[in-house]
Image (cartoon, rainbow, N blue to C red):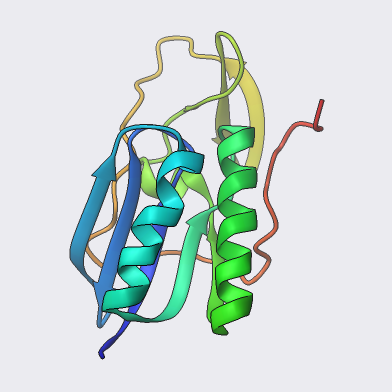
Length: 151
């Protein structure tokens, strides 16, 4: 079984999961629905087919519930299977465009700080899986980045 790396983008719909061989996107899953309903089934199939060396997940900002579900699930998978879990900032995968927050507010990254703001005419880009992992910034600090305090 060839070792692969997996990228999970669960902070927006559709859920995106990419399988990377030698850091190049090999297979892509795009699935509409709740992360809690989807992620276990997809990962079950992936784990039966591939040996995972690393898992990258978007740890925020974005949907709190989706971030929590993803983190707990992926952390469990990483511990049980001894897989390295890394975090990616959501702005890495949407051309640094605003990310939906609460109501009419959006998360915006300015000078490496994330702030909450109105859209003010800024364009929003969809999240995409990168074609290559070569230039993606990731961190071993994989705790969720909620930005705002939990309610």
